[in-house]
Length: 158
Image (cartoon, rainbow, N blue to C red; front, side, top):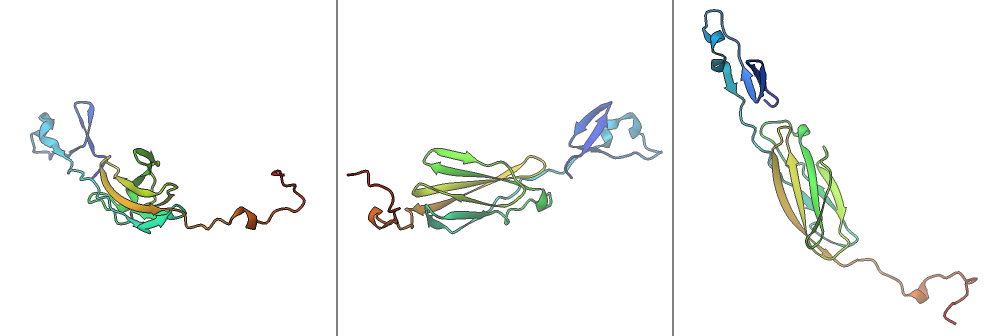
């Protein structure tokens, strides 16, 4: 149970739970006998898929971390943070968000890494990495002579 604390000698100690003593018990004189550690808060398991797995510089890659889980907390309490490599050695990070779904477009060809951090309310994290292959643009660029030009414009090359 996240957020447990106990008061010992006027101090609040996070992560501890104090249980009451019966009238016939001598534990009132020894508060240490009343303290039980909170159950451990295990880290979440991060997992995601990328759709599509390969694309071009025109592709928006959709990432979905709905498969991420936490053994201690409901999934709606998880926060998701994505890291995108823009080019070799340069990464960008998004802000933690409650949505497990995001998207990203790579403007440079190559193999790119996507990293997911999943955070639980206790501050534990799980991490998962995936790679995507990005090739050149699939757009067809028309040669300049076939582009419609305004006939009232002068040709500055003459």
